[in-house]
Amino acid sequence: MIFTQKLEHAWATSNSMLMVGLDPDPQRFPAELQGHPNAIFEFCRAIVDVTAPYACGIKPQIAYFSATRAEAQLEALCEYIHENHPGLPIVLDAKRGDIGSTAEQYAREAYERYQADAVTVSPYMGFDTIQPYLAWNSKGVIVLCRTSNKGGSDLQFIESKDDTPLYLHVAGLVADHWNTNGQCALVVGATFPEEIARVRERVGDMPLLVPGIGAQGGDIPSTVKAGIDSKGTGMMINSSRAILYASGGDDWREAAALAAKNTRDAINAAR
Image (cartoon, rainbow, N blue to C red; front, side):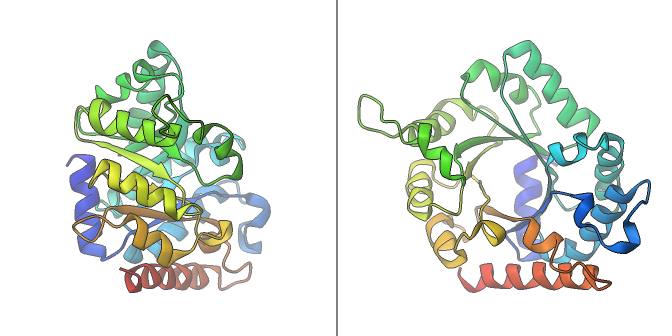
């Protein structure tokens, strides 16, 4: 199943636009996992299992795994998700952006090594850095557009000759020229709902990955109103830390499940 089909199926079967982000920080793990040799895998596996009923996908952030030499645990986790939760798309949050020959290797890393259904990429160096990912016809390519961090405005609001801000220029490039397989999506942060609305208007029903709710403070009703598509879906609204670390006690699994359910329900209430 190609990425967009898998995503649409997940939206429908889970009745959810919640994307659960995996940013595993061993210093914040519960006591039972402290010192465990495979703590990252065990923690993330438990989070996936308890949040899967409320999610449309899982988004591991690669830096949290590679910084602690846990790439093998990420491989095992992705395999586990495919085997035990085959309906959930895996979005590898890597934000890659380099020239063609290097991009080919990054694509292999994402799609072969980690079996990701989609990967986040940076458009800053242009189409030839995106093209190698498009060679994988069934895989998603999620392009940074209007990011949720404050510093994103340093570049993303620079205007072109026709007074179009750079983030909208990127949205137009992806929608009109780069989306050759129909598997592209855009990253647009929940902290800027007005910009989400402008991107949605520009790209039609293209999927949006929307970080920034939960710990980053994005407003769910404003986000949903701004970004929902003509079918009543269209978004992967990511929450990471607010779910992962909902409790540091023995009830951490139950707390994560409840946080995911409440977030899913809040998103649905705003549709």
